[in-house]
Length: 189
Image (tube, rainbow, N blue to C red; front, side, top):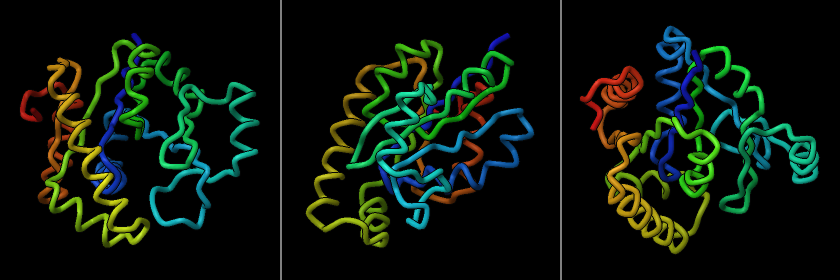
């Protein structure tokens, strides 16, 4: 029996990395692997624990077919290692910190993907993005507007393979909702 690809998406600042860190031990108990992305961001940069590579290194890896999924967003390149296909074939669930913009391509490649959309109240998201200090106020406002458009469009599709998890409150509550979604329980809607 094949494993499931679990594709976690949400706006920058929604808390995807914090959620994955908080849920890691309980996901491992469920034989679910959390994938470490390859990103063209310096390893010293604040953010997720990803493998940082240069643009040239990324292009070489991509040319060598080292990625099951790859995309560009926000001036960076992202890759999901090819090993996920082996893990899925072996029956393991695989959780990926994915891209909202790359979702249609991912659905084509992995038709049975479980999509988890992490949302957060716009005021909370604005505070988180401002606190990070990576972008100007104008860039943050543009990002917030894109987030609303994307969420509205995705939710309007009424996709049964999509579950919405709100991360505006306590992280422990969000972890419980994440695990419920992965376990197929209806409480995550």
